[in-house]
Length: 353
Image (tube, rainbow, N blue to C red; front, side, top):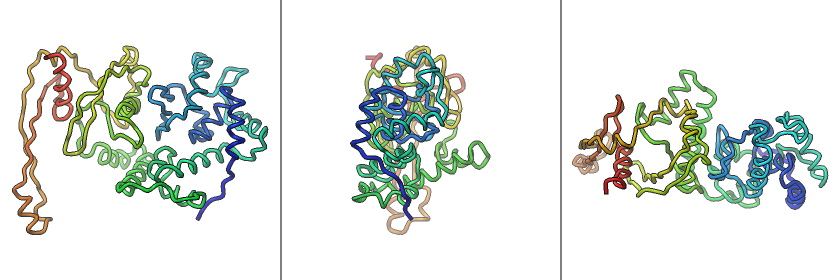
């Protein structure tokens, strides 16, 4: 069953935003209407969550692309206000964070100036509807923080044409999203930890790797790398200088696009690893890799479920074996191998040539 939403007039909204290029109400309305943030998210939003380099707002449960109008507004406010308070929306008078009630009141005055009888939640819903007109359900679920099933139930009646076609992995994306929601609700309970270990670590606890993850729809490898660096280690993109990409690496689980960058010293000294994704952080001096010889080991992967396969497929697969060669370093009790070691080895070629 659908829900009833009040939608603003687009021309009126654009006039309001034009009159408020970088005021508090201008920031509030842009965050709600152009970025889909709720009132509580606007209230709590801090400057270290605004990734100007990666052009995204990094919320606890999602990353939202930064629209040009919002970016321009926030950049101006950052220059004027960031040193006064870490919160994005602060009062022009007191220079302190605005409570939710004040945010609603200020936005209400701006909306009334054009006769818009909508509230911040209506603006967030309008953001979702506009996203659904150009993107598929899983993408909008990721940027809105709503499950696909919720989106379909609430917003289908508002689409003048069907949402953009879903890719073949849409059902899997929805299942992953719903599982993620359960994990969020369980938190650090035994059930939550067990679900997370199986989902996020993919049965590989303790593996050593660089920050990284899946490239989201519409992202470049560079933006994905900066986003993952923020999500896992809380290093903002403006403290990273990207030096360039390395050659892509093909693995049986997918293709990896390594990026080389320099992290500011103050960021390295203030690392705040995300406990939901990172158990431990350690660094290895470049000199160690350059002076310590690595060993190479060969291992084989063979099918282990032949009894589940019908003949003659089982007979064909029985003879299948894939061989991998991996460099290995042993550093202070850590074993660096696999794709991580391959990436290090590729990087060292710049110094060994």
